[in-house]
Amino acid sequence: MGRKIGVLTSGGDAPGMNAAIRAVVRCGIDKGFQMYGISRGYEGLIDGEIQEMDRRSVGDIMQRGGTILRTARSKRFMTKEGFKRALSILDAFGIDGLVVIGGDGSYHGAWELAKAGIQTMGIPGTIDNDLACTDYTIGFDTAVTTVLDAIGKLRDTSSAHERTVVVEVMGRHCGDIALYSGLAGGAEEVLVPELPFDLNELCRRVILSEHEGKLHSIIIKAEGVDIPSHELAHAIQERTGRETKLVVLSYLQRGGSPTMRDRLLATRCGARAVELFEESDDSLTVGTIDGRIEAFPFEEALSMKREFRKDLYDLINVLAK
Ligand code: F6P
Image (cartoon, rainbow, N blue to C red; front, top):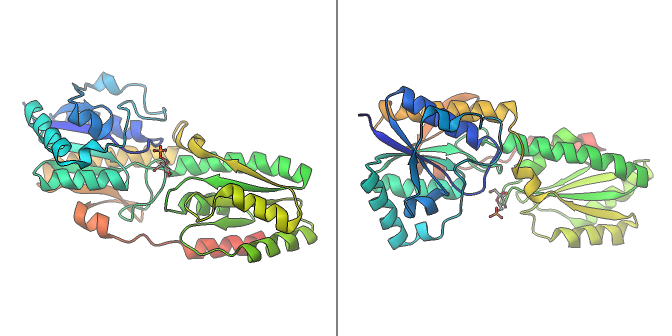
C-alpha cells in the first residue's frame, strides 16, 4: 500500500481550486498513493472530516468554481491545542503527506505542519495574487475576467449618464486585481494599496478629462486602499460636481467557472505537487516563475518580496489620458 496523502483547501475559495484537487487526486492515485480529501480546511482537519478519494470523486468538477472540499479560515488551528489535535488526527489516519491549496495565511499553517514533520506541499490558490513565489495564483485570472466583464457593463451605463463610477475590487493588501483589470479594462484611474494616492490630484484629472470630452470616468479602487470607498465616491462627487456611483464587486469576484489559464495553472501545480512527494523529502510550494513550474521551501517562499508592477501602473496613466 502506498503513502497516504491528504489534500485540503483553505482560506478564501478561488476559481480553479477544484481543478487543482482533481489533478492532485488523480495524479496521486496514478502514482500508487492513497488519497484523502480533508473538508473545511484546517477546521475539518482538527475535526477529523476526512474521506478517501477515488478517481470518480473528482469527476465533473474541473469547470466549477468554489471548492468541493469546502474551505474555512481556522482560528483553532492557530492555537496550540488545535494544532496538536490536527497532528494527532493525521497520525490516526496514517496521513504523512499533505497538499494545502490556499494563499498566504494557509501557507503559514502549512509551514507549521512541515516543521512538525508532516511533508507538506503548497499550491497557490487565492484570487489576490499576493504570493511572490509564483507568477500568478490560481483564481486571479478568473477574478480579473469577472471584473473586466463588470467594467464593460459599467462603461455603457456611465457613458449614457455621463457619470463617474468607483469600482471597488478585492485583493486584501495586494493591488493586482485592480492593476490588471484597470489596465486590461481601460480604466481612467486605478488606486492600489502599494502606492500613495492624492485625492486632489485624482479629482483634478477627472475634471480635466471631462473638459476633454470624456463621457465617463471609471476608477478602480482596491479594497486595501486606506479610505472607505463610499467616502471616496462622495468626495469625488463633491469636488468634481459630476455624479459618482459606487459599485462594490465583492464576492462576485470569487465565484464562476475558472478560465483556461486558471485551470491549466491548477492542473500543472497539482500534478507537480504530487510528483514532489516522490522526488523530495522536503516540504515545498509549487508555482510558476516565468511560466515554468518551480518549487521553493516554505521559508524561502514566504520571505520573498512581491514586486509591484509600477511599469504597468504607469502605462494605465499614459493610456487613460
Ligand atoms: O483572500 C481572498 C479574499 O477574497 C480577499 O480578497 C478578501 O479581502 C477576503 O478574501 C475576504 O475574506 P472573507 O471571505 O473571509 O470575507
